[in-house]
Image (tube, rainbow, N blue to C red; front, side, top):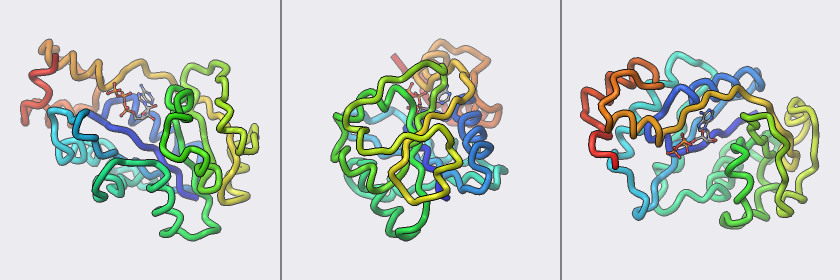
Length: 207
Ligand code: ATP
């Protein structure tokens, strides 16, 4: 089983680390792929993909079940999730269980994605429910079969949808960037990430 957790990670923070660890725990026999996305030119961060990737790799090291996968950084053009799923499906084969993990916020706008109707044929969907609140599922997700138990994901390759209650660590990358701009000395990121940010003078000019 391959579990997929994507994001911008600009920068990676304690919430991301806890989430990756929770996924490794919830899916003990899976590889958890943490997938940094390519940023579209109009949303370009002031920090390069190389720095984002270096920090993410450092934050996830020494966790044997977790791998940082550069599939989206290595591909030209926008990071459409369906394209990533197609590549992974080709790499791992038709029978491998692929589990796309999305926060409840992303799920709410999934009908605005590129080819959302293709998702259910390519992977399962695991909705990360941090606040443990009821989530209204957009109609487009009707193609998935609902299950209460995430262990069902191992029984087939794609097409199931489950919610997973996960710890709620109230931090975002936006908040981290703004704390840095305010020259706060304590950041909600792993210590080696705080060192890296300081050493490379990252995010100093955040507005
Ligand atoms: P930004 O503030 O720049 O929008 P972010 O903190 O939300 O960033 P992303 O890189 O957009 O981080 O998120 C990557 C993934 O991590 C998403 O699936 C998101 O739901 C999840 N995530 C973000 N913040 C947390 C958190 N505090 N705890 C657990 N998961 C999180």
